[in-house]
Image 1: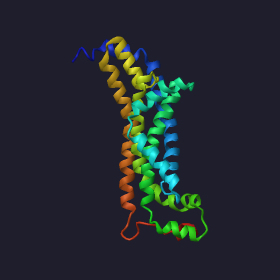
Image 2: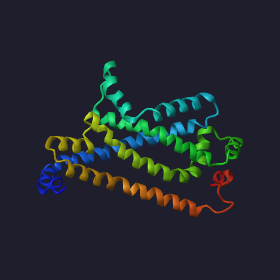
Image 3: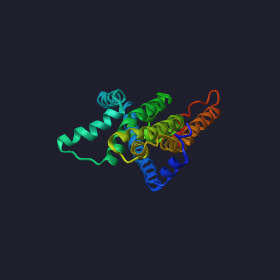
Image 4: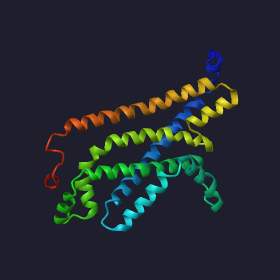
Length: 238
């Protein structure tokens, strides 16, 4: 055990601190951009699940079922190895952003769907009676009420998204796990490489997991018996 974590191995790792820092930065950037894509897709498809017409609901289910039932690793591999066969060339950084964003967008759409379900359906009818369109109803009435319900699950999804950036090591994505693998395989100094990677992932994900727990506890405290739902009329007047 002492040999696995020998001081000279730590020195070798930190001698490449610039590369480690760049890999960490790449992980953060990929996570942020992928999260933006995931949120955009998640809210779009989540709201489509409540559309009046069957076609948008069907498109939502196709997207969710395909993405959720195919491993992320395989989806990233398709973007990396299959798209070039059709003349579509994408850099590994953007493959990571797109692949992870699309993958987690499906899960966030389910979070959005669950949040929308927490609002009484009668409020949709009340909004229509006031002349609101579907998108106006979502924007001004339904989403403001459901967002608090969604927030804990969205924080969990953000943490999962960060951890899933590690699959990009398969395609030389330049993120934290790829650097750790490259360093470990090139030097046989496995201990320091993976300990540092684990610590850095923890520093990114732990605050989000704590945030999710705190938001959930706050939401439970704010809910009072008989006051679970704010009426549509309150939002229309507000």
